[in-house]
Length: 86
Ligand SMILES: [Zn+2]
Image (cartoon, rainbow, N blue to C red):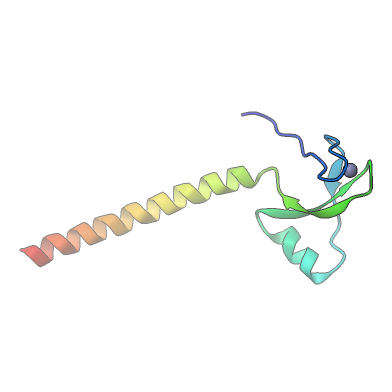
């Protein structure tokens, strides 16, 4: 897997962004979410919300979960159709 470095949206410096502590309730919710996190740039002092680096792993597992649920629903629907037509 390719290691992605977080790029600052303000100064475009690579590897200067660090996780920032949440200052208010909204930021706390953001930091507890799977996709987003509050970050701070050590180079220019930019502070904001970005997608987490590991959100790709989460979305991959959520795709697997969605595929599993879809497969289960698909077989239930097939079973129902089979019973209904007979
Ligand atoms: Zn910066």
